[in-house]
Length: 402
Ligand code: ADP
Image (cartoon, rainbow, N blue to C red; front, side, top):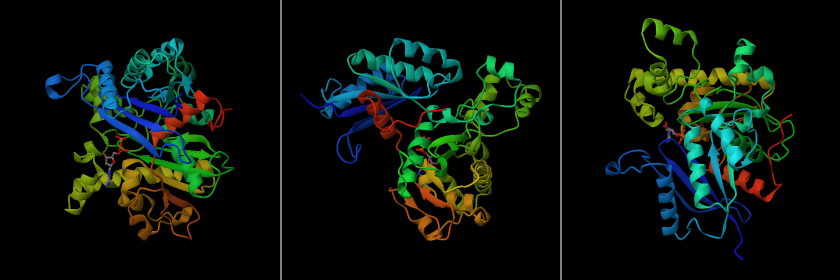
């Protein structure tokens, strides 16, 4: 009998389906990834390279896997791990999917109307194709389930908030979990038992969020009921006076959908300067472009505020970890965000910071009280690990909430 050693990780977005086939054997599980890819333009006309729906997208994934010699019918598949965006308060750990779980995920759709339906569609189709295989959903909100109530509760009328499930949930949890443990390992701690290790994780991708993690448990995070709150992002505003929304409705005559689109798709870096790619913004700044320079300044100023706030939340910080597209690649963002924070014990080493690389690394000065690290995230590996652990029973599960 063939050993079941591989996890297929599926990330179903509204218009794309990403996949990775990850081998979980050997001393470093995940070192071997026999196949990976992306099917894009789901729901767009075939003439423009689109596929009609998630079922067709997954069939395409199956064909690509088969062409690479790893068809969906392969006996070495252990399970399929699905990225799921919003678990509400119901799903605080990875879960084996059955009809009941899918029904409960459906109930969470109002909280994540863009993301959850795509996740659910991906899971349904995968179950039809391989009904015999365990399917595991790993939620982006789960790592933040340990937030204390004073951190997750908004200062709103409690009855209204509770009636509508309005609270901070936080997102990018899979990444924050992975990076906080990888940072502990990098600094010589046991990631499964980091003691009182305190780390601030800055996930700076197209979406961006920051979390404060104490002893392996998340205690604060910047995204809220939806991924709109917190840092300045590629196209999202992040923090904003909520009264801006009333003002736009009353003075600019915008309806709810128009304001939603403005804040989620036409704000952030793209709203400030027309570009959301930090590489392009860097090029424009080098050419003396003032709008790009201002967008950069607003972006890093917000990061500094959160670093200060989360330093206060944690009381003591051992490490600060930068991850995702911008965090891993932009020395300029790291430098500008942390400049002058010696008073908080944060001193970047400009030479180390400028060195490019793909491995986790320390970029602070030897004298820095807080270690600053660049730690590439790997959400697919984290999903595969949590999927394997759940299916096999035991293993390195995250610490229980409570
Ligand atoms: P997503 O949120 O889509 O997963 P990523 O984590 O891949 O995003 O980050 C994408 C962003 O990373 C890009 O929009 C770009 O701004 C930034 N980025 C990628 N490479 C570089 C680089 N070499 N220098 C600066 N920024 C980069």
